[in-house]
Image 1 (spheres, rainbow, N blue to C red):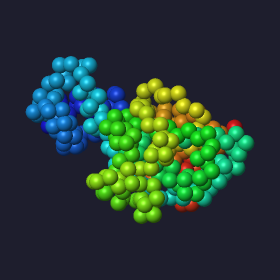
Image 2 (cartoon, rainbow, N blue to C red):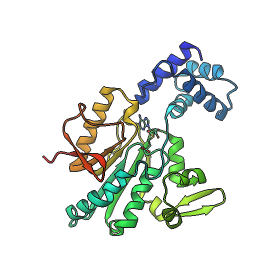
Image 3 (cartoon, rainbow, N blue to C red):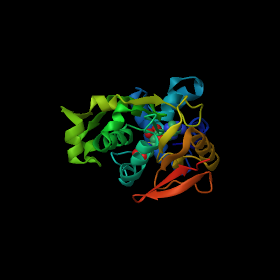
Length: 272
Ligand SMILES: C[S@@+](CC[C@H](N)C(=O)[O-])C[C@H]1O[C@@H](n2cnc3c(N)ncnc32)[C@H](O)[C@@H]1O
């Protein structure tokens, strides 16, 4: 891939999704653009680049952003956060909100839905009474493609083989030919919405738990700070933020306290 095309794409992606693509990642951009060109019936990357340059309003720009996201995810990814929910955080919130019976979750880089559905299965298996509360569960992502799959709640054999205990598969999924479908009643609890973390956020209620895992790693420091500041304001005092294993609030926003629960590091909005 030539340098001007690579620079065009990486600057566009940085400006509109804050994702940093370092020089040296030409092979990655090239392979993602090739897949996109095939999906859009465009004969080559050169023709795709020409269309992008000719028409700045072309829908292809949005498709390039989608194509450049990394959507790697799995059920019960890293396991410990779900243990922390089960052993400490959900019991604490059940007690804290026993009068209002109101609890709010947001999953901010939801990808194809495995993370949100893992939280819901944890609730359904261990605290089913919460399902009768006024529970809101918002899950957002920049990519239309992953949200389309999440909304259907359909997973391949390969996807359910990654991290999902057999007992949960049997209890919460139905097999339909080649794919497994997540329990409709639980799936409908999640409101999957498109939202770019670096554009205006959707109106959301004060949150008790935010999952924003494995997305800050793609952003520069200023963007991480802005996003963490907005999450701080969105969380209720004492609310919890889960980040990915390579991510932290340390040196970015000191208004969170680092807490280790069930071997999982999470970040609590300081009570104030
Ligand atoms: C690696 S996945 C993480 C999925 C899940 N949170 C997990 O840890 O398994 C990162 C997700 O962040 C989304 N993403 C990347 N940039 C984004 C942005 N600017 N706004 C919203 N979502 C974004 C991608 O589309 C992708 O689905």
